[in-house]
Image (cartoon, rainbow, N blue to C red; front, side, top):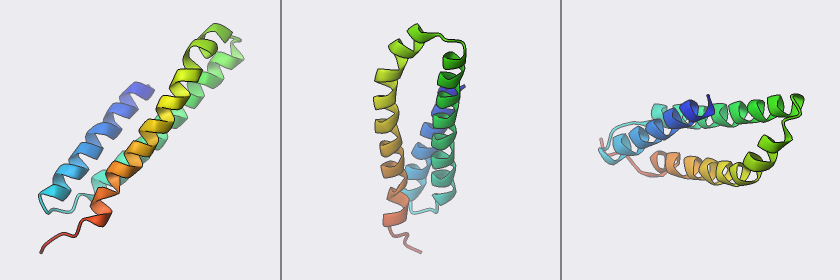
Length: 92
């Protein structure tokens, strides 16, 4: 599920930047992208919680160290990319 939500977040971030560079208001895409980034983090955390309840330690030891770093980097990137629409002035 988190892969699906993350893909939507990336698509919305791209739409946000594209609309902003075309001098249109794309802030709604930015909001949706940041929201789906949050949903992605919640879905991944939920999956890790399920693995913990099942005592599936191998999955946790394999996935969590690398994915925790990746999720931090992708979350910071999402916020940075979506902030472009806040700082670029739209010519009207």
